[in-house]
Image (cartoon, rainbow, N blue to C red; front, top):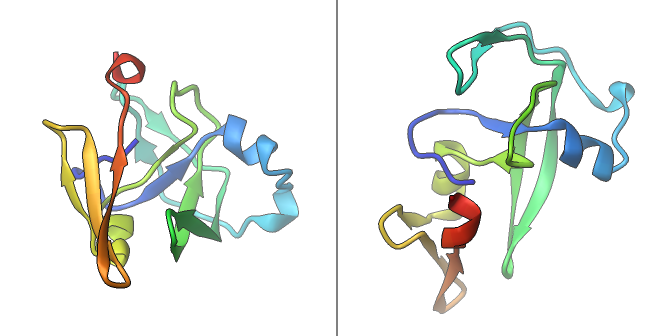
Length: 113
């Protein structure tokens, strides 16, 4: 999910486990965050990973949360800026320049529901 309203990238347990990551891969992160339900959540740590989107790769600092989410990860303003991306929530698209052409990611309306 792309969320323009926050300043951190979040990784949830399904992706963390799916990537085979372990607690020793994490560095500490001491600031609590507020979840979608308004409750405080204490992150289990943070890590930096390369993320490939189309033909472009950027390093992303993820805060790893041990909380339920229908998403595996949420990318936010830092990722958008690193990509040089322009999001459209209306069209469920993110467009970015890669080499000499514009690439786009297209979201799924059914997944959003």
